[in-house]
Length: 165
Image (cartoon, rainbow, N blue to C red; front, top):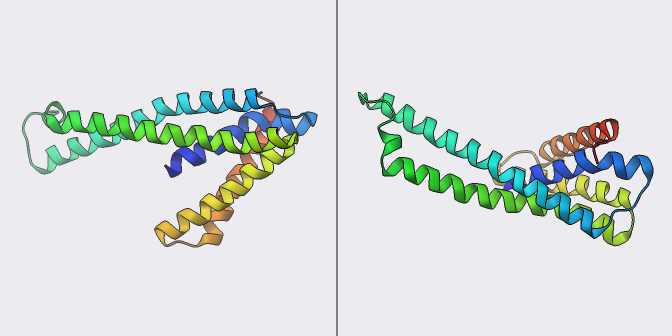
């Protein structure tokens, strides 16, 4: 979930900040929805591939540790099918979070008719997400928030330079 939210927010920053901040234009709800859906759809493939590859590599590692003679045997069993199924569900959940992470900051800017507010709310959401992650992993809320905020600023700057959307 955390990866999906962060990815959606960062996608929104990278893809829209050049359009919003350079030209001082406003966002409309239609654009916010389209970008969020595109972010979520692309995320489902990325998240599935990453999670399934990780699960398969764990099965291969278990095979080596158990000294099984036929490589790929565990992947062809119920364990392999469970890995694929788990990866699919994980990808769907992450992609929905990705969609929501991109959608909410953009809709805040669209609703207020202030494009810069979408960027500011995305950066604030990243800082809040960092503090939340820090609480879960017993890390420093300041460091986590600062790290995610800095990544958002870097991607917003890249979006301004590249002027993608």
